[in-house]
Image (cartoon, rainbow, N blue to C red):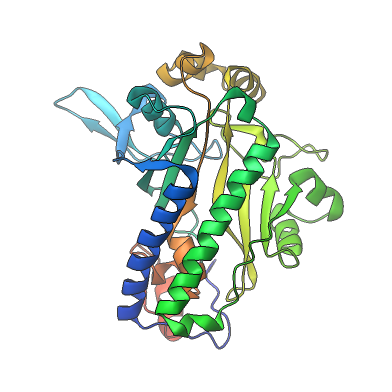
Length: 337
């Protein structure tokens, strides 16, 4: 079944050459602004991690990692899904103080992703993580951090539009964040799917942070899946923006205050993942050896799509697509990189 839908009358704001210039400027601007706002230091990150460490993320809990053996080392490795757990371990090894953190460019392969306008098996994002104090493990601290990220996005858009006036036809990102819980959405829109609830809300609240993802709601089902060993399901969420080109919600960031020993213990049991307690990362966390942190990922290609007014993620990143998607985009005059 074809997953790609091209809006009627769609035409890109920028040609291929200007698109590449704009992507480069966007990435530099946003990373610098984000790093300054959240006190983040850029570090290098791995493309793969050793399978036995438990450092890789299984995202919603079911995705399969790309695995391979390293004969000379006698070890098995996995291409990263994200760096949520690796970043926390890095903060521990690098001795980052409270109030400071790291940011890196993460490149991943998510083999089980279903490609469409917003999804690709290739993932590129800014991964960031920051050391916090015990007093910071609360919703107000989370909300303040979300506001800083949204401000960085809006500031980046303003500069881009000054350099590329063609982009001024796109709506301005609203800095006014609507904070809503996943339970409030379920109560407000009973009988709808999670994505339908998001679209119904975000259409009227174009900059939204959806709080509390991973734990079951009153319906018995979570709004969306979250692995039990990085986000605290009571202190996390997604930054959702309204994409005027596609006429739908676009998720730009999944983030949250990370599990402390008590939350990890609780969520491993709830998810039926008690076998992970013996992995290196999980042992250290349960024993209180790792710093308390907040962190997340911010999609580079998705932010590029939104700020450059693109209809397909393949216009701003290089990946592999099925023949039907390639043909559909070609017929619509869309050039996939």
